[in-house]
Image 1 (cartoon, rainbow, N blue to C red):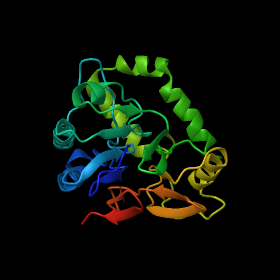
Image 2: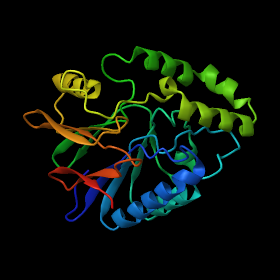
Image 3: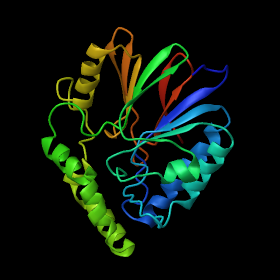
Image 4: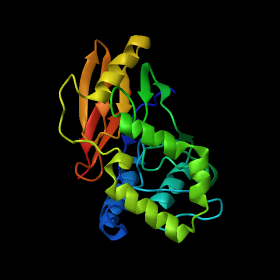
Amino acid sequence: MEMTSGKKIYFASDQHFGAPTSELSLPREKKFVAWLDEIKKDAAAIFILGDLFDFWFEYKTVVPKGFVRVLGKLAEIRDSGIPIHFFVGNHDLWMADYFQTELNIPIYHYNKEFTFGEKTFLIGHGDGKGPGDKSYKRMKKVFTNPVSKWLFRWLHPDIGMQLGHHLSVKNKLISGAEDVNYLGDDKEWLVLYAKRKLELKPYNFLVFGHRHLPMILKIGENSEYVNLGDWISYFTYGVFDGTTFELKTFE
């Protein structure tokens, strides 16, 4: 993708709308919509790197109640011609084709490579990557199994959504919740994962969410690891102007 002069690419992740309750997350949702209104003025593309919702499940004919403001704003921006890309996180891993069908927003379940101008990117949510966290990785395999999704779909939506929301908020194993303190160069598993990916192929920027801790680390001569932070405590986002990548805070 060629970068048009004056245009920027924006990145955000881990909004967790609906947590801890719909009422308490509503101000954060309104703030995120205000951010979308602000960046649409010069956005060449927008990347949402997962956990937009604290829990999401797509029944064949039922849409989860709520989030109408953010869904409507995403539809408006996409209809205006600005590309939006969505990477599934561990809280919304049961996404299917709703975003693609209704909003014309592609969904990615795995990392994906992009090139903007002369810079190469590896982009993903980041959960279950790198060494360790074996309990969560086993749990994710269970939840992404088609049989698990089929069984859950047979629950009445009133029961299924309530159960899913409860587990998403309360069960740290399911959520893959992380310590939001920097763990050290030898223990930050997403950083270790990014360095390992660099051994296989050069990237200028490796951009992830999930960790909830905003940071940019130089991990190679021409490579930077980026974690976007969240929209719970930090309200941070990434912006790429064609040359440099910055983390900013939306006030």
